[in-house]
Length: 432
Image (cartoon, rainbow, N blue to C red; front, side):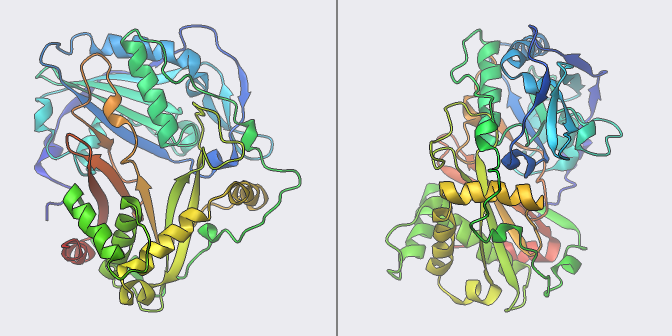
């Protein structure tokens, strides 16, 4: 098993001094409301986009991307502001127009030499995203930080560090695609809808569901001790044939009428990880994943809604139930969790946060994040589509990420990190 400290961590990147890119025109000032769905996931997400064109070198890459950023920030002006705490003690954006942080950098090699970027490698890939020195918390990190790294072969990498409270995956991809359209002199395909007040909590709050996504589970299996081992990161590719096989396996006992790729794959990795971490039979385990609520709200959220429109849903059961039952049982749990997400459930989740200020607990939990349907591939700043795009690192040790893979994007890469001994067992489980 190749470990995270692979040879490519020798990558040498020289960063110039950071500058600020302000909106090209005067923009609205003042405080910008973030909904409770934004508050819930205020983590920093680092992604990279690799570009190389046969017909165009990287000489003007910095200028093109920087100029386009200045223009697109007129539409997305909260990204040029700074995070602060409101009078109610919640995150809010102060639209100061200070601008996004921008860094120009140069690598001493060709883009192909970065190594295997299909799996998270915080050591190597982290050099392609600028970290604010000495930042102690998210308030000290501007909501948007960009780095353009030029490689000797004429290729370049755009590394982004964005706060999830500004956009979920769908909103972030709308932003990056708008930025790249601007770079090519095109109008925005999907102008952002910025007003988030439609997701305000009700007054008084009305909690109508249990919201076990926030439940703290006791770690009776002492998995925290396993996590003291060295972490190994890996990616497992499920091609269309393998995904079809998995769905067949889920439906072979006739219990389910239908089963999607996401349901089968989530159930499969939840079981495999539970086994790999050697959980006790009566250890409760929780699956968390986000459901896009944009079309499930009543009325639906407007096209171009740029904030978080995702709501976390959950399923909890004992480890022995997962491991002793056929795959159809676990898929059934995933389906129930998806069907639970209605307008009233989502409004109740918003009100639950309003009342408790609780964050979802990750104890004895697997958090599946799906990026496989996000339009990463359409990002084109004028050098053609990205050769590769994806995360620099996994945000938490409990996270497994699904990324689309291959030319047609019909395969799914499952990315995760596990303690060394658990990864060995997980790898065995991946043979279907």
